[in-house]
Length: 324
Image 1 (tube, rainbow, N blue to C red):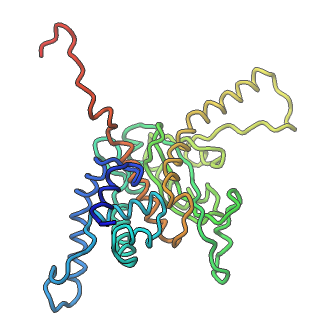
Image 2 (cartoon, rainbow, N blue to C red):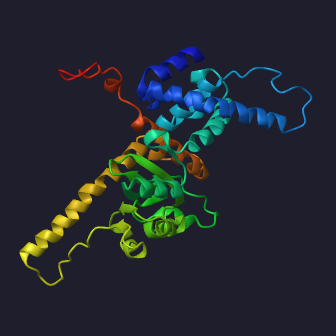
């Protein structure tokens, strides 16, 4: 297959990259100059006998490099298959993905008015300024088991997933749209420990007006953050003293109401795991530090992009008697 046909096939159907044409065009306009500037800076950073730009041209232009990275993240396609698809060597595909993936990770998550959130501090500041409700949770990505001679091998064994995982912190808005995904830790770490190591407790103390909903795994965090993190009431145990039916019903209704508001963060996490690179990561574990924010930024851009029915929707008619 020629590179032109491969590019046309990747752009024509949204199922190939997971992104609409409008989002793909924005990525090309935004990342193309940055990739070119980094390439020229890298070439000029060492002694040269020829001027920058001399010699053979790239067989894989930036648009194709971007598409190979997106297809790899979306479907987990191996570098060998992408090399056959675009008619280049496997090393070219590996080098292209290694160059484009950090650029995608640096984009951050898109919110209203084109604002980008890059760090956990940006997210907390945004929630405090806009007075929006945030949803807090963690997701685990299955990874390859570390080698037997590696120190700390047991830290990747997750007691919940019963597998070797890497855990990432996820924050969404009340509608489940992604605001942050990162702060990776080995899968054996507790959710509370991950949040404390990420510095979320200190950020919530500095920025007032932030409210985060979390699940029962974050019990005790509400007291540490002066009520900024809300967790569900503890479930009643069978050996507890009986209470009036009305109190028991109110207790269960409160728990259900909390779960109904918090469930949207699970929907946001499901959009992440739709990308095969995060369903089960078979590459190097250290690459997840860039893969997670890269995919989160792509998902948030697609979530904020106008839908096709909104692009072609005719303008609303003015009410009778309204001046045109």
